[in-house]
Length: 372
Image 1 (spheres, rainbow, N blue to C red):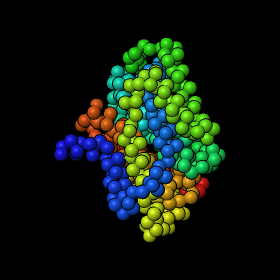
Image 2 (image 1 turned 180 degrees about the horizontal axis):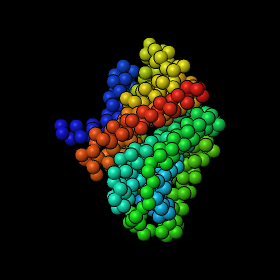
Image 3 (image 1 turned 45 degrees about the vertical axis):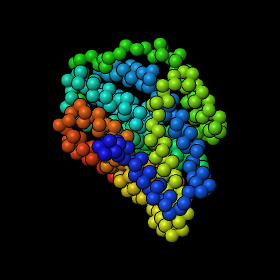
Image 4 (image 1 turned 45 degrees about the horizontal axis):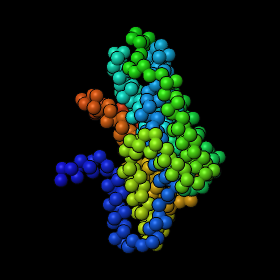
């Protein structure tokens, strides 16, 4: 029983999606139509991107990048700006959760070494916002973008209009928050450990770079996902088969469960028509509010089944990643790292996190209302 409680706590979103899928299957009995529910292209791309990013991470590429840039920081303000910018732009390629897994512990370590731990809390919160909002700028930055871009058929231009104005405004706001801080010189040399050279690991990154390029060509609908999925699996099997264990299979299963739930709900006319009428024309606020409760990835999958305005929904679920701690599950990563290092400051983290997230959400939502 204790094991089940721990599992539910760790994989809450998957458990909820499984319960919803199971409940809907009691109403709409399983049949061959179930096979048409999942978006197999999205699932294949998610799997491939997760395993490729895990490959880069295993080589220490992101840590090397961070250390190289941090060595050039000469002041606290420049150091904070560097960390925020790293999170913002790295999340566009390696996703928001991997960015935070990489750079939040790195930040805590660096600020401990230079004796400026009082600055860590605000910086970790700004890094979290940077990763969540930077990831919105590309189709592969986060799972909701990948799904909506893949499933909706919107053009790259429509995608850019739905996300880039807000990503740009978010970057300006983040830099303003950083440069508003008091500036101080760094008295200790920044060295987070590890003397690895990017030139030494560069040859080992070639297979992963090639696979990433193939995935991008699938994202932009140049190649079919099937052959690329087989190619990725084959290369990983040869290069480093341990990477198969780095994939978040529960995230993939969460997608499958939500696909089943939504597919079944669509086959219940009364419920389907009710949801369509409740969501259409109100996608912005439906996406933002739903994300606050169930997080933005499930919100994207759920609401996409009942609207045709995917551009607004794309904006909504990305902005919806701001707000509560569960609005974007990537935010929980920052909280866990911070709470582990400073267990007595969990309440302080929640307060600072909520204030800054609501500030960004209010400004960006107001901009969305004007632009939409």
